[in-house]
Image (cartoon, rainbow, N blue to C red):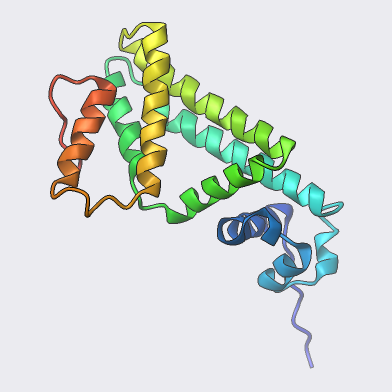
Amino acid sequence: MEKTPRLQLDRAAWTQGALDILAEEGVTGVRVEVLAKRLHVTKGSFYWHFKDRQDLLSGVLETWKEGRIRDIVKQTKREPGGEVAQIFHVIDVYSASRNRKGILIELAMREWARRDTAAAAIVEEVDAWRLRCARDLFLACGVPMHEASTRSMLLYAYVFGVSMMNCEKFDGDVARMKDDIRALIARSPTPVPSPS
């Protein structure tokens, strides 16, 4: 009888599995035994890639940070003359509710950061990147530094706030309100219709 070969996971697969659990249960749910069971591998195989649970958690933080920063840089990359359109793009991408798992990971990271200094430092670094990249877009539009900083803060306060809210029953025309908010943040003279 031929033996079925054991599934071999790399460090990235373990880290992604831990991020999945983080989204569902928070950092306290990220346990080696649970993760091994979910990934259908032995707990012993975990130690080929990580020294211990703390090493895994450090890997989760680094993976999340690198992914967020890479995405922020990509989404805020500006084309000369297209900065206002890029600001609208950033608002649309980050305020869309299509990535439920992403917002769950974001919330779990922030909860973790309230209790752990390493997580707090990573979240602070990611937020600084977000704000700087958005501010650079506003600066490229000719907005003065202090106002560009204010608008970048407003942009992210809006996109994170709206992604956590269920405001469909608040007003009959939520789409109009979202367009108005986008126009206020980018300070466009007329609201730009959202892409359908």
